[in-house]
Figure 1 (cartoon, one colour):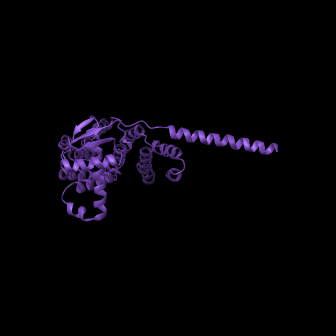
Figure 2: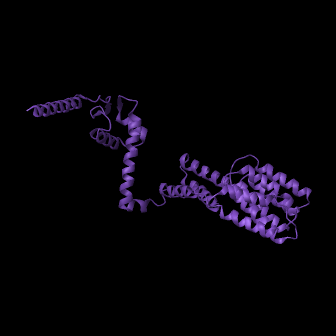
Amino acid sequence: MAAAAVVEFQRAQSLISTDRNASIDILHSIVRRDVQENDEEAVRVKEQSILELGTLLAKTGQAAELGGLLKFVRPFLISISKAKAARLVRSLLDLFLDMEAATGQEVELCLECIEWAKAEKRTFLRQLWRTTANAIYCPPKLQAALDMQSGIIHAAEEKDWKTAYSYFFEAFEGYDSIDSPRAITSLKYMLLCKLSSTQYKAELRDDPIINTHLAKLYDNLLEQNLIRVIEPFSRVQIEHISGLIKLSKGDVERKLSQMILDKKFHGILDQGEGVLIIFEEPPVDKTYEAALETIQNMSKVVDSLYNKAKKLT
């Protein structure tokens, strides 16, 4: 019987990459099969089948089936050593919790397992499940997500780059410990905090390439802010604009002049009165385009008449 189970298990493993459903069916049949406690080979194959089946169910997103498997194998756990039972249970629980299926049964499942362990007087398993149940309330990924949000709040709302960096670092360590791709996002935010703080201002300003790009970004942000400030007005004092964006009147006047020349908006600067007059954007005159289209159509007509006349002659 053990030899047949070994062959079936090997066949199930060979089908994992090509036909997972068939592999799951074979493993299910092995797991459901009763084995003798003194048949070490059969017990070993069943242990491996349970772990392999749990892994496949987790990969295919079958959370309910995985939870059912954890309940189904309880009688089998009594027939094996405490160490093996603990390892098997821990592996299945980790697979179930790592799925993040949000079934709402995570804590309930652990509590059921604790009650079962109490009834069977399996003290070690009861303690193991209790520890796991407590950990569910704040698993590493949830803690990392909380740290990430705290960092975002400090960076976006309070501009406290030093505190935000520490939170992003904690989030990075949390995500990295579970091999989550969001660790890269945390790392990017850490770099943003370092760039935004004044600690390395000299290094950034002394680099001509970085300085050029920073200057371009500054100009773009200034233009966007000026457009947003002057949008509600048709006539506004330059001094009022400079007060809103906290820049000198001369700098604002020079930037507005440049934007008018670059046709970023339509308006004029009345330097005598110190005001900016904004015009409505003039409608686009399509007369030129219409004339070109008419000429092209007439050219096609003339060419067509010429070709017909040429055929007649």
